Length: 103
Image (tube, rainbow, N blue to C red):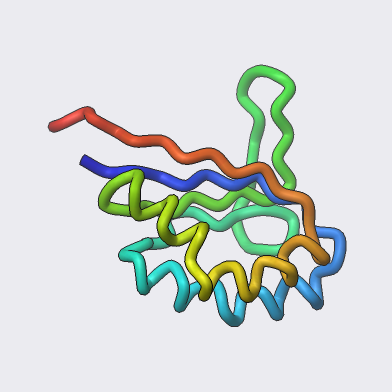
């Protein structure tokens, strides 16, 4: 079973957000997080709306082994120490999704 953190981020201060990016990877790795998608207006790649009104500016998806690890990562002291950098440089919506589909 896998779980995914999906973040829809609007970056207001790219320089400060870059500072956040210097640290966030290590916090994800500690909890087994693997970056799957990071695409948007301040990175390579493209977002194209196929249907509906959702228009994310920057989209991130991180895979974890299970939902509890996402919650542990988010509430960890390591992530909380850098969260202010993200909050000061962007607005974000995060959701966590657990996938029970087996192939």
